[in-house]
Length: 158
Image 1: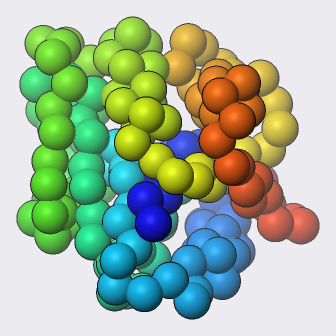
Image 2: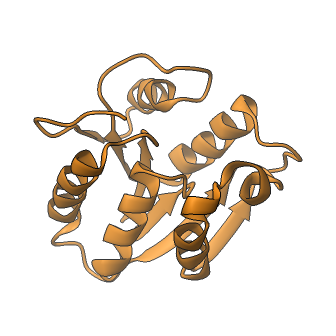
């Protein structure tokens, strides 16, 4: 089973705990054949990546652009990013030199085209810009990809 993730990067610490609990439940019961597809952004993507690995699955990372690590990974998240990237079974880098909205949507399109199912850590609001969580949810629904929205009661964005 290939499960992709899309979700907000700006979760509150309390929401991160709530979301991780739901992700653990969603991934329970899959065998070692579980493959998680993540762009490895802060927030939902990294919570999902850890949940996949702890469930015994493998991780495929899709980086939006060649400069993603240098340009978008903040110093306070670099160690987590590098740790998860190092545990990935595969890493795909999209053919963009610079991280931008088009690169983010292309990476999400790659995840969508590779996934049997999608999880979305989404508050139901429209995307804040092209390639945001709302756009990816909309694309998954248009394509008929099974989608589970995760937004626990009490969840909030920072």
